[in-house]
Figure 1 (cartoon, rainbow over the protein chains, first blue to last red):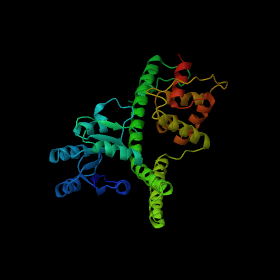
Figure 2: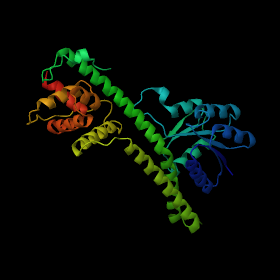
Figure 3: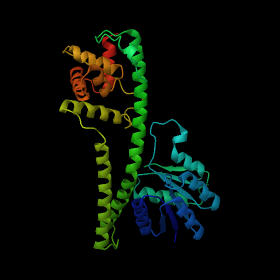
Figure 4: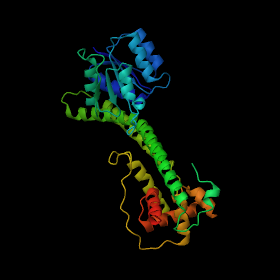
Amino acid sequence: MTRILVVDDDPSVGAAIQMMLGREGCDTVHVAGAIAGIGALESSSFDLAIIDIFLPDIDGLETIAEFRRRVPALPILAISGFIFRHSMDPVLDYLALAAKAGAAVCLRKPFASRQLIAAVHASLASLLPVERVLEIDN
Amino acid sequence: MTIDNAHFNVLPFSPRFDSAVKKLSRLQTELMSEALRRAVDDAGAALKHQLSDPLTALLLYLDEIKRAGEVVGAEITPAALCEIVDRALRETERVCNIIELVGGAVEASVDAGAAIARGRDAIDLWAWNDGTKTGAMASPVLPTSPHPLTPREQEVLALIASGSSNKEGGHRLGISTRTFEAHRAHLMRKLRARNAADLVRVALGNNQ
């Protein structure tokens, strides 16, 4: 069974992802912050981590980098709803930054089930080189 | 950036603008538009971020409900289905509450004319973010107004063109903010302007 760690401070998003992936046959653990996420990572093993970029305790980008340091083989799916549409400044493109920090796939909120499933499959595909970024458009 | 009193006092409050003030006004308007556009961009991004969580949860729950109705052997009990529907309703309420908060942030206007003009302003500003207009606002074609402006309206137009807020403009003319807003609304109707930028264009265009 695929084990997935979801790090998102929004309890509804966490619960909905948990319900949806549970139905897909995944064992999903939801935590609300980066520190709890790192704790879960230390006490258990996972096949995939889904991390929201805006977390209350530690910046999501730092969290992604920390996950990468601790478990380099663990694929990471970054999710975020924040985007500056007209910004030309690459510093403000959070999903691109997440990819740089080591996320294998980036998914923009809001997303539907099929988009999440596609993103999870893409993240899990071991054929996908870590450096390659696949952005799933809504 | 504001125009100081020394500059402002030379304004004759007539359709004829002093050219230096005109240039300054134009510069100020451009700077304000840019700052305003940036602020609206940021506000839009923050709002989208706030809405993205309940909308994501709602989409996932609705997919679950759809699947329960479509997939043979989905094996979902009526109680479990009710629970998902409840959750979806809660997320919908969250979205509604956010929209309510956004609406509540807009101060009420004095009369229907002013309210419509302000609403139009806000909608046009938000429209900058919808992807149909990129970067700068499209220049509207303004028909020539058949109604001449009253001296008071000319004063109000001059103040708007120089970048005064409703509060500042009211203060300068010795009238209330709401009265200034009402004059502004009448001006917009008369000049068929959709927003403050249109008014500024009219003010500058009439005097060049």
